Length: 365
Image (cartoon, rainbow, N blue to C red; front, top):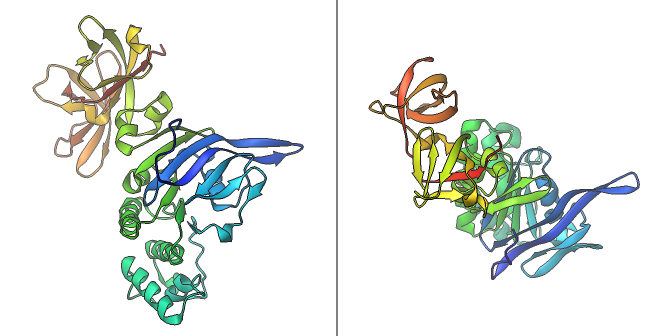
């Protein structure tokens, strides 16, 4: 993110570099990474394993020192080169991947663990409020081993929120849960954080979790944020091919830019340049050959269409099928089709282009 920090930024991560000693040298893992959150915003660092997202989270928590750059929270400097405020002084809460609950303490006592400075009545009011908020009011006297994974995750969240941190860090908090539960819990966690007005950062490799919980998402590659944006823009307006490949499901199909007619021509038809077609590079409009990104929801099943495509693969997803289709040229496409259209492998179906947001990149062929 090269833009200046928004006014009233609560968290500022300013050009940080983080690395680890390897022999006599420092191996840099995070390279000048920058982003900011205003109070009450939820951010997400999203990327594949090894991209540096957890290292950034650890630096914000105070577990890693900076080689360069600065981290500040609420106007207070937390880290710079040569200085790292201790984790316990940062007013930063952390929800770990394995929840890290105390097995010998009840749910109530786990949540109350960090509230020793409060009076008993204040502590009780705070814990009871959080138990109600996370939907565990009837589970207060149970122990972690008596809870499901989703319930343990809620306890860990409540415990981290109990001291009313200035910032909450969520380190792959849903990774131990089954797929169906992850997105539902992510939405519940978002509701809780928004109700409390808590600023938070989620680290994950799962884009569905990121989309469910975050206001802004930073897609990371090799220790850098390559695009900091909303989920909608990441999906429909990726800045580069890495983001386009990593976010959503889609394929690249050859296209030709026709400047006199202000359109892009592909095998499925023509796309007017003025109707939501985003050209990736500033000099792209002068190029002739391009690759056009088509998402699965850009291809519409239409029995009346003269353009036919062969069903190569199909994946049942309840309300819809995800079809892999082959055009007469051999070009592959993806299409989301309502599940009452149950076509066999090898069958040919009619399709048409239904794209509103199409992104082109320089051709690689």
